[in-house]
Image 1 (cartoon, one colour):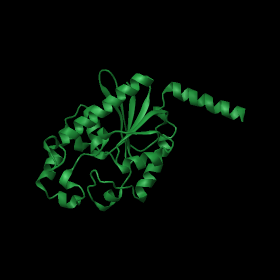
Image 2 (cartoon, rainbow, N blue to C red):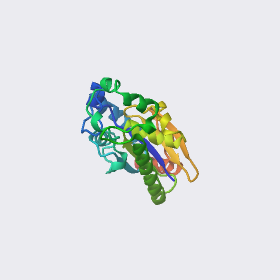
Image 3 (cartoon, rainbow, N blue to C red):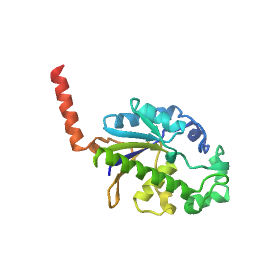
Image 4 (cartoon, rainbow, N blue to C red):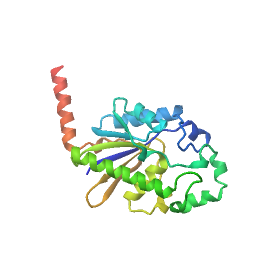
Length: 224
């Protein structure tokens, strides 16, 4: 199997104004652009075999800023939860709805009006990550690194599954804007390597890739 880095998109105009964007085409705000740049400084030296993204604008923009040379593959399986009639509404108003407490305390039972059930979101997100991980691992070997850019609830659901947690516990997990979480899948179980990470990721470079990069740097210096 391989190792996936889960990147949440940077802060958006909707995040800043307290709106639930859902699947609306909201863009990053100035803070989100800066966050994406900082994420890029941590990601740029990693030898990614694939970069997969939610098709929504905020994820595409985050990856384009963080990894401008990457070839991005979109996958609907990583898109935001379908919040239905809740999309575009203020979070402070949604917090007064009876469904809000279900979402917070018993999300496996939550289904948004004219939208998606959270259990369905979790199932398709986990299936998408595991499918890509198996494919990339088969093509590039067990040391392969790949990136998936998605949304807060989606990433939390994927992490909860990797931790062996019931979806009803996933609100205990934090995935901040532009944060990075890391999961290494194996034939027997996943290993959650990092959650909500904001620091140096150099230790994730596989030993062979690290040695190759070192050799390339020395050769480049000598040849120059």
